[in-house]
Structure formats: structure tokens, C-alpha cells
Length: 459
Image (tube, rainbow, N blue to C red; front, side, top):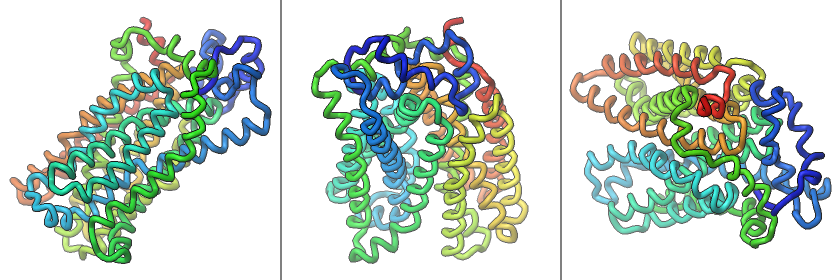
């Protein structure tokens, strides 16, 4: 991500270990011709072009800084959404927002993720992934700080879009940073990132209301306080922005990748694996947004007290914290990730079936099963890193899979609401959720095959 023109002699010692790393995808660690993209190895990205590779102590310090940046970034990728959900009624009343506009807020995040996420590859080529993630954290902090005080619905939505733009580009580029800096630890680092993301999601949902009460009871303060966490996430990325922006020759590490990255833009669409991964990502996002938006209401309509229904939703989200760390590590050790997608999908089918047959009696079991099913998200992120051989391929695949996937997810929560309103119950919505799980399983099987998108696009 930093550095200038670096000779092959300088790079050779730092590249070799990455070829035998235990956790890399089978397709990316054996074939000699696939070793060429080692130009994007993390050690190279950290090299100073004037002095060669950095000292061991400097490398260790820089690596720790990247790890801190990844964790803090992941913690900030959902509180903008789940903190608003916790205070949505207060926001609606405070801004005089109509019920229909408030309902549309549930579809704004995936729309922004799809639109702004598509910009990430071009921004990364121009400024470097770390600089774009840093700017994304600035956008999140600014949007969260501004939106409660924007003075109306239009201003609130505009500031929310600013925060969501920062989330979108960071969503796309985090797998890229993991692949470039930790090519031999894709599974463990993706697990750490996914676990931090799940923790940020559940924490914002759980503590926003009591924290708002402790800060004086104003929903504006309760929403704005999350900007502090986003501001903290800016700090670890600043050294990388400074070094890249200095205009030194030290741009080779991150900037040589685009030499290999840039094929014709449509090529990624020629890959069946890329399309399968996009569909898998979109359907798991659909299930996640339906869960966040409607599951508590399903339990309440079944006679579960409101407080318990909220706790059940929290349990569903908390399930992702440990599993988000375990699943990526397991996925990188398997030649085919399809069986994991099948197991997660079966849990979803059992959970939705239980909600239909006995929503109150088995509420805790159904919440846990659906929480397990929603761990398809870290699996999708892991496969993004495994289904591309080069850093360039990861950038394109991540942007394509996430942008297309989030577009696919937009209608889901709205359709569930329409079916619920017109049918007067949860039978049809739950049937829809279960039906969507079947193509999700099929897409996961296809996306989990041991192949890379560069080969498919070339053919």
C-alpha cells in the first residue's frame, strides 16, 4: 500500500513465504504461474523504496497498526444502522417523519452500499486502499455527527448517506487489505474482522437506548455519540495516508497492483463464480436485513413480551461474534466451501420453520438457529479473498459481489412488509424467507468451488 518502484531483487525474500502459507486457498498457493502476483505481498507494500525492506521491528509495528485499523474499522461498519434502528421511533417523531419514509430507511443502507461500493476500486487505484478506508472512517464520523442536527428529514437522510458512503467503500476494501497484508492468514484475519463487525452490530443495538438515557435522554446525543468510535478508527490509517500521499517513489507496493489489476472492466462479469458469489452475498444480505427489521416483531406478534423480543434479536446478532471468527478459519482449510453454505442454509430453514410452527414456544432455539444462518456473511467475505488470485482480482470481485449483492437485497425487507400487511400474518413472509434460502444454498455451493475468477474471465 506504500512504497515506490522496488526491484525484484528487493522483493524476492519477502514474497517466497507467502507461497506456502497454510491458510491460503488451494487454488492460490500451489501453481507456479500463480506466484507472479506476489508483487502485492504485504511486505512489499511496507517496503521503503529508498532503503529496501523495512527492519523487522518496523514491520512488526506496522503490522500491529494494520490489525488495529482493521478491528476499529470493522466495529464502525454497522452502528450507523443499528443505532438508528434502536431509536427509530424517537427519530420519526422528532423529525416529523412519515411512517412510509421511516419504513424506507430500512432499504437505504443496501442501496447506498450498492451505489457507493462500486466506486471503491477506482478510488483504491487512485489513492490506495488504506487511504480510501481512512477517508471512509472520516465520512462515517462526519455523517454520524451531522445527521442528528441537520434540521429536517432531508438533511438527516443526506448525512446518513454520507456515513453509509464511508461504510460502503470500507466494506469493499477490507477484504482487499486483508488479502494484501495477510495473504497467509486470510481465514484468521477475515474471522477477526467479521467478529469485530458482529460485535459492533450487536453492541450498537444493545447499548444505544441505555446510553441515550445516561446522556440525558436526547435521541440526537444518542446517535451522535457513535461518531467518537468512528473518529478513533481514523487514527491507525493516518501513517499510511501520509506515506502514500508524500509523492515519494514508495507507491510501488500498492500502485504496482493496478498494473495487473486493470483488465477490461466487464471481465469479472464473465466469471460464473463471481456471479454465484454475488447472488450468495445478496441473498444472505436479504436474510440479514429481514432479520434486523422484522424478527422482533414476529416474536411480539406471537405473544412474546417486547423486552424479551428485543433480547431474542440481540441473541441472534451475538451468535455472529464467535462464529464469525471460526467459520473463515474453517473455510480456508477446506478445498470446497459449499458444505459450510449448506449447513448454514439448513439452520436457516429450521429456524424459519420453527417460527412458523411454534414461534413463542421455541423462541430461543429459533433465534439461535437464525443467528447461525446469518453467519453466511463472513463466509462470503472469506470466499471473496479465496476466489481471486491477485490483489487486483480481489478488488474487482469484492466490488462486484458486494455492489450486485446489495442491489439484490434491497426488495427483501420491503416485500416482507407488504406480505405481512396484506396477509395479516407471518405465514407468507416466513414462506418467502425459507424459499430464498434454497437459491442461497445453491449459489453458495457454486461459489465455494475451488477456482479463481481470473481463469474464468480469461476463458
